[in-house]
Image (cartoon, rainbow, N blue to C red; front, side):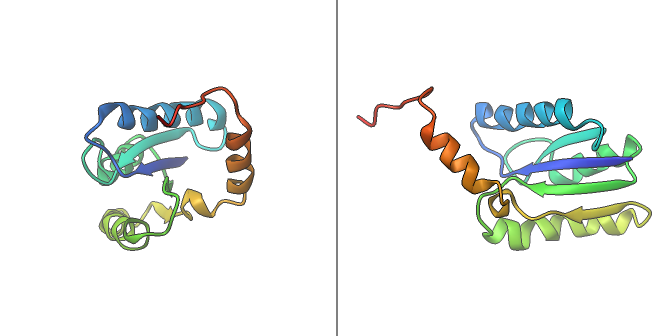
Length: 128
């Protein structure tokens, strides 16, 4: 069974963490055929941690886990921290395929997403 772990930074602001959890739930609803298990995981400041999210998937029967960094740019967290956190979990479970996808900012869909967001009039914010 395939699983997806959506990795975000984590925040002291609970509403921000809840946004990620809600996104994981929406992904679950729309991609359950491809990924029967979808879990959020946080780098820091929130739970579940990345290892906890991966372990949860494995305990639920995942034989393959895709870790998706929900980050716009390939900063230190994407390039160093996430791989360093995932590696020991993968080593503990050699029978499970665990891979890290490209971060969200590298998606070919990002250009369209930004343009769609820019043309949206639903949430105008007054800068003053």
